[in-house]
Each structure stands twice: as C-alpha cells, then as structure tokens.
Length: 289
Image (cartoon, rainbow, N blue to C red; front, side, top):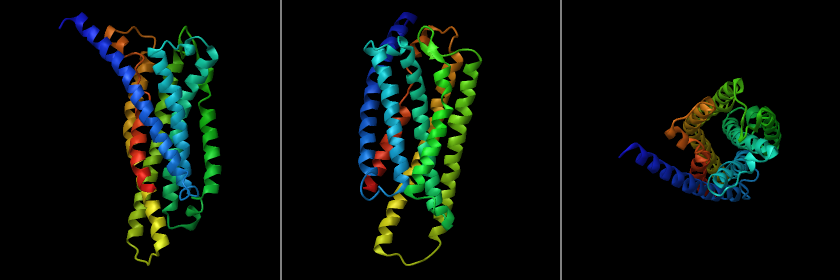
C-alpha cells in the first residue's frame, strides 16, 4: 500500500471514528447520567451526603458531554462552526469544557473524602458526613474551582479559529493541568481511598450486634464505598491518558504538522472519561437501588 492509499484510508477511518464514537459516548453518557439522577435522588439516598456529591458529578459530566463532545461532533460533521465565528461563544465553550470535568472531579474528591469521614471511628469526623455539611462544602469547593479556571476565558480568542493563546501560556496550561487538574485531586482521591480501606479493615475486626435496620444502612454505605473506590481507580488511570493527549496538543499547537498528525488534529477523545465513569457508576447504582 503506497503513501497516498494510507492517507486516504486514515482519512476515511478518522471520519468514521470521529462520527460514530461521539454518538455512542453521548448516548451511553446521557443514559448513565439520567440513571444516576434517578438513583441518587431516590428516597433512600436523598439524605446521604455521598449520593449528593455523586449527583453533582453527574450534572457536571452531562455539561461536559454536551458542551464538549456534542459541539465537537456538530463542528466536525454538520458544519456548526459558531465557536470559530463568535468570540463570546468561543470563550464560553473553552471555559466550560475545562471547568465542567474539573467540577466533576471535585465532586468525586468530595465523595471520597465523605467515605473516609463516614467510616472513621471519631465522632468529630463523622459529623462532617451529613447532607447539611455536604451542601456547604460543595458550594465552597465548586466556587474555588470555578474561579480557578477563569483564565481560560481571558486567554482564549479567535485566531482565526477558536483556540488558547500561544507562547508561554501554553506551557502554563500544561503545568496547570498536571498540578492543579491532575496531581492534586487524584492524590487526594488515592489518600482518601486508602484511608477508607484502612477504616473498613479496622471496623471488621470489631464484633458487635447489628440490627436489621443497621444492616440495611451498612449495606448502602458499603455500596457507596465500592462506587467511590472504583471511581477513584478508574479515574486515576484515565486521567493519565487524557493528560498525555492534552499536553501533546498544547505543546504541538502552532508547530508544523505532518499529514498523519493533521489527521489526528481535532479528534481529541473528549468524553472517554465520562463514558467509562457512566458505565461503572450505572453498574453500582443498580446495586444501590
């Protein structure tokens, strides 16, 4: 197969992948989000602080799906180029596709923290694992998250297509993604995850009578812990893939690309993290019901 044939084949495969994969991601992701809405708003879980955090994560991930994956699909295959025509929409879209997954990650970190606090033997720690405290903690954390991503609005513009400013800001965004978006939240997830495992392991050593109502509560709590730990493990693995691709795109922005690299441009797998989270959450959410 000569070079021209390989290029034509890659163009054909890229077109098919960038068309069908987002459709599958949006479909499964939307179904998963609505399953989470139904599950975490059920009567049994409305007073549970961990389910409140997961509900917030589902809302943020739904925003990511439609402002990121859906608009990318429209742009690539249906001639929707508003982000390259409207300066305001360009800034809003770039801001939302970055802050929405960060807010979802923030909610998962809070869910991991909640499981760590709720499984602690210290009453002062367990007092923070309540729905009232969860609302205050969520409001404070998401406010910090929203403000910390304002620079995406300031340093994005039409040039002539919608993109972040080049130069030293590119290096800043890479460092920012590594430290603030990835290292800090996922380090906290792992710490809370190991701490929760230690609390559960220590609790199993104790022998005490358990009533029927207590068994039901413990079963629900155990399922929420399982969801959280699975979320932490999958998220930590997938963030490295996403971060690697993002860092490459930012560093290579403005550099002259080969024919094969141009085919890859514009096909960032935005949403693969969401679909993986939706699949595993849907599985454990069914148990929680």
